[in-house]
Image 1 (cartoon, rainbow, N blue to C red):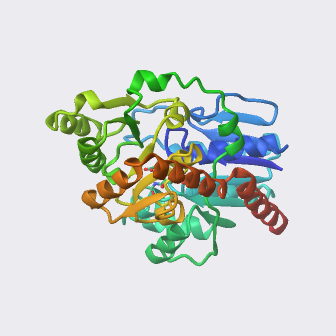
Image 2: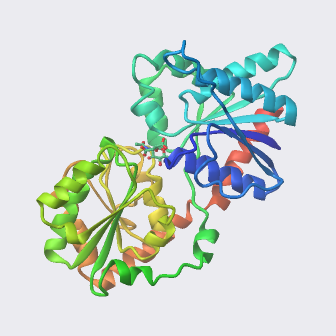
Length: 376
Ligand code: GMT
């Protein structure tokens, strides 16, 4: 199949999922066209099956806001015609589903019928899309998609609760490429640079937005390091990072916390981590937790949104109510205090992660693509 993938190219979960999906589809022989405003972060190599088309928005002083949706929908029309693309797969409803629908309509006018699959990722529904300024356009473009998928059952339920959606929503969970991870030849001497042998390594990875409850990460680690020699790896960047650095200084644990900023060495860091923290206010899925589990790292998370569908309580880690840092600390210590227990959780984390192997998930997308093309 010839598929156009529209996504955000940044370090966010939806962009990562879209990129990894496209690369694996290309690996299986499909022709993939990424269409976005910058080359996606995880799209290192282009090959005959992987194309990247940049959306340019010319700056014009008359416009207070530059019209990205217009440029994107025009680019989609041009690329569909130039490469005979058969299907649009847009990740994140805002504004991608809206721009995709406009492209569909323009193409229809020229006698070209192209189906659109929209994948909902979470913040496009729960945090941003739900805003009254966006809601009508988001409802409209979801209802006008040929196929709608969401990354968890929890997100599907939220979408039905928050919007007036008449379409069926198919749940296709996020995935990881286990073969790639397990075959990665990482030089693990970096661990000895980061921590002493007897210290446990606790890690958090996110975009440091408010929804991630970054102060809870720091407070939770503070309680852990009081009982167990340990270091905290803080990976990522965003609006809450400066506040986190301040809190670390206030608590006097600056020699135990390393801030990496946005890093391309996520796998390297996870490969030597002992515990992953994700106390988010909400997560439609929690891809970072799954990536940790694929590296045999157990997870302490909140129990909100789709997290219970990924982090199995008492098996791959533990869950607590949002904001209950005391309970999270008790559970983190339960895992870290005893090496036998820690190793059992590590093993379990990998076992659970295996359920989300790309080999199991990708055919679900392929089936929906085929149905959409056949029905269009
Ligand atoms: O976590 C974020 O804030 C980024 C956001 C995104 O749109 O990239 O992540 C969302 O999509 C990810 C991939 O499907 C999910 O794993 C994240 O749980 C989800 N984030 C939220 O729901 C807050």
